[in-house]
Image (cartoon, rainbow, N blue to C red; front, side, top):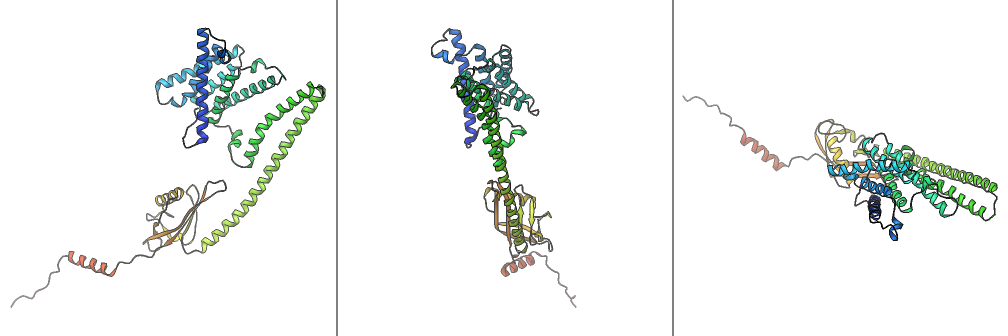
Length: 404
């Protein structure tokens, strides 16, 4: 459950840092609360941070169960601590939930999520439980906001102290980023106008009803609206805002679809033109996909094969050339075999480049080579080779006439 930390990736470093700080604060707050109960000093500045002993135990177990999860596979002692913390967290959460404490729901759901992530990784129960924790904590924050605005009291089911609520919210948020998102939420992590629109509308779907409720309460408190009229306006404005968001999203997706279709037509025309140019070239041309599959070769390229009889460049040479192209390295010569004469031929690479997609990812790889003429042996070298071969050959016996 612990996110992977890479020092060269700030996008992953900050969530890991937030999780570490949150777990440390949870453990520190739990220990401080237990010490204050043991010493009998629960007033003053400590009283602001103090929580009940059951909640303090839950915070300690949450801190250890989440923070030390990434070290579980490296040490038996750490594994024992983590597994014990998970079980104790579930027990404490269940007891607090039965007692009517809202924070117990968070403890119970987080504990079950950690256990299911470790025991049942393929069933995806952890994703559902993590989403439940985030939804419950969001409801707690909305209730706290409405109570601070003197609009409604906080229900006992959503009553969590501010500091534990902030710590649990940070931990649940990072756990949600480290959990594989269900298929319904995958669009939020994708690129494109649809994902951008979804990321904009997702928070607005929560903020607009809350803001309308605050405005309605203020207007009714000031005597500007009657309760029945305020309720009717609230419903109409909520429906109108949702309708406006749907229309805006539909227009955005329609515009993006038109741009995508026109771009696809232009790309297809350019691709056809390039293929026509490659077909009339005398130099061999190969076109590969980003996955390394051969997509196109012109007539000049089909005259050659690998030295071991494989098609194209051969698996070994093709993998080396494409890897060099991806890494920005330079390859000078290809070694192939003529299909007609089966003579080895050397080809000098004239052009090797990776074309990027509009999203900046590697796309098509184009390779253009030039056939080098066969190297004839030098005259002097030929004479030396002939003399060497003659000197190494056995002497030829001569026939002699018998003496009279």
